[in-house]
Length: 175
Ligand SMILES: CC(C)(COP(=O)(O)OP(=O)(O)OC[C@H]1O[C@@H](n2cnc3c(N)ncnc32)[C@H](O)[C@@H]1OP(=O)(O)O)[C@@H](O)C(=O)NCCC(=O)NCCS
Image (cartoon, rainbow, N blue to C red; front, side, top):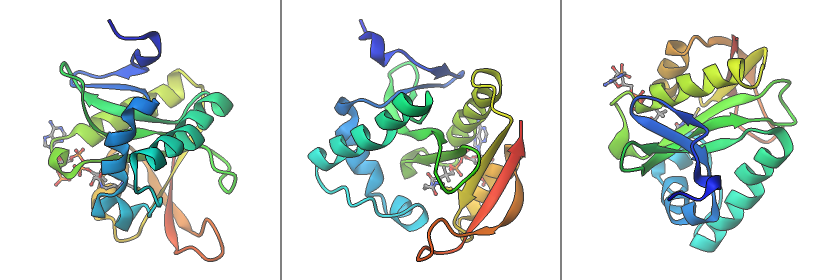
């Protein structure tokens, strides 16, 4: 039987979303080093399973403890095959939480990202009572922009998270 901390936070017809744990480090090592992740989101400098464990502790798990939400592991039901991550982040630079998602290329174009992100968006409104969600996206990331528009997000402005970072597009959706 699953340990209690592996219970799903959200389920959809095809997917289960749950909190990341140290046991997900090998999967995260793979996902964070996908060329599409590095190109569109950034290089997190995670090169070993140990690095990935630290990333999970300092990133998603710190966020669960501080905000009650974070990035979740997305698994295919019923086998619980990990295929990506999707969830919410709260950054100091942005006034509201933003939605994030990344999937292994083998699982693209099957509607999984849309299914996971729609569940996270609805949970933000119904479970967390958030009034508004943001999203930031690399201007050249057409697939992600299409997904955000399908989720009801609208373009707000160009922004920059740090002075030395590239410009990103800020999207928003009132919940
Ligand atoms: C961004 C990302 C998550 C988008 O993934 P995706 O595969 O395009 O999204 P989906 O899985 O929802 O697939 C949507 C496509 O599947 C098609 N599709 C197939 N079966 C489907 C189904 N059952 N339900 C819905 N759509 C389905 C849709 O028509 C759509 O096609 P289109 O985009 O060509 O019009 C993915 O490209 C990724 O992980 N990129 C790397 C990380 C990244 O860029 N993250 C975003 C940072 S802002």
